[in-house]
Amino acid sequence: MSKAAVVVGVQWGDEGKGKVVDALAEHFDIVARYQGGANAGHTVIADGRKHVLQLLPAGVVRPDRIAVIGNGVVIDPEALAREIHCLEESEIKIGSRLRISDRAHLILPWHRSHEIAAEAARGDAQIGTTSKGIGPTYEDKAGRRGLRTCDLRDEASFRAKCSEMGKEKNRLAAALFDSVHDDGAWVDRYLAAAEGIVPRLTDVSAFLNSALDGGHRVLFEGAQGTMLDIDHGTYPFVTSSSAAAGGASIGTGVGPTRLGKVIGVSKAYATRVGSGPFPTEAAGEDADKIRERGGEYGAVTGRPRRCGWFDVPAARYAARLNYLSHLVITKLDILDHLAEIPVGVQYELDGNRLDSFPPDVDAVERLKMRYISLPGWQQPTFGLQNYDELPQRAREYLQFISREVGVPIAMVSTGPERHQTIWMDTSSVPKD
Ligand code: GDP
Ligand code: IMO
Ligand code: MG
Image 1 (cartoon, rainbow, N blue to C red):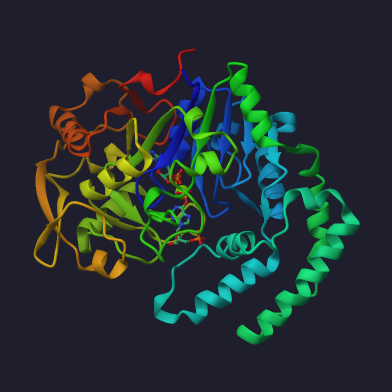
Image 2 (image 1 turned 120 degrees about the vertical axis):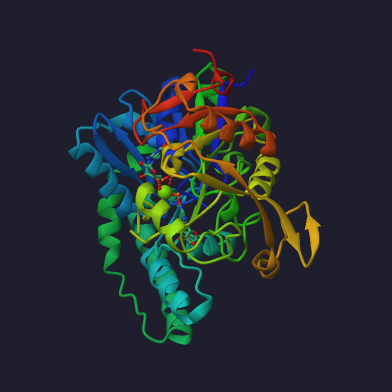
């Protein structure tokens, strides 16, 4: 029996993965991030304090858990140093609890500036990225010219590599974007930040595999969500990494058969931040009310999130891609006010019923959704911890989602704090 599990976003990110990982981490020894970078914003509220984690796995908030940043993550050393500093300021000691892959790619300043210039050049077709340099860093990784964390070990060679790469990036910037010129002044700052990184560099695959051999429990924490996955999401309105559960294997060097359970996190409704198709997007007052009640503003960028209804066909698509063993439904409490709750149950494309998710965004934009309306419960569920305390209609809503998606619900979240959680199926976590 594998003592591992993967937490993956079912939708377009911000499903509440931070809260859920923090709650699940009670049953795990190690929490490992496997992809993405500081584009993620995972909110954890513990002991009344709010932490927004961007690169560090959410498990780090618990005092004695080991936190791992896998090779699939792209790291801005300054951002990581700031995040570690910020947590230590709030009395969360990180010390030797953090291991960082010696093979993770580095975000360099030109990745950020080129991304901003490239987004501006796209005009109306902007992806609406987080401007953290994520896409260009993965481009250089796939182009086999990236710099990695292990390159920080040798200062002279790092300087030489940056200088060489800088020349090429400046030629590129002059040709494509006109104005961006990099003078390399940041290299000293990166090397200063590296002082907190180099001593923590580890062969993460070796570390995690031997931890699993030794009976330790490992939770893999995905960032973004399935619908933002580079391969399976609403391309090109996606992020540049493998956010789906398979990314956990690639992004940490742990073989697929060791990953154990796959827990998909979804809001009881849906949101999306940035551009791209969103089949169940709501408009007007309905959307505004959910945005205000749910505090649906980006944890990283502060951008208002687009809001809409639960999308059954998209969730089924995510269930298949990730082979979800369990679902976690978050933010049930945000729907407490509604008399009726629309749920998108069937796509139609050009007049025909569609039972899959189209590959091209033009087709996704043309989808017509058939909705059904479930009766709301119009009673507070905020903070409830027992399934039996939920209003009957809230239970029916959850049962409907589970049945339609075809995946049992492991947990329901009724508030942002750790204890505001209803456990429904503890087979999602290893036995203690
Ligand atoms: P993540 O990126 O998937 O970790 O999600 P974010 O942290 O970006 O966004 C989720 C937001 O919802 C955060 O502000 C959480 O504190 C909050 N949240 C998570 N679960 C619940 C819940 O069940 N109820 C309420 N009211 N808020 C929640
Ligand atoms: P967490 O882990 C929601 C979105 C951006 C943009 C697209 C590409 O907190 O759920 P990128 O900067 O990655 O190149 O942007 O992906 N995006 C997210 N949306 N939650 C996230 O992370 C996201 N990370 C990226 O808004 O549309
Ligand atoms: Mg987030």
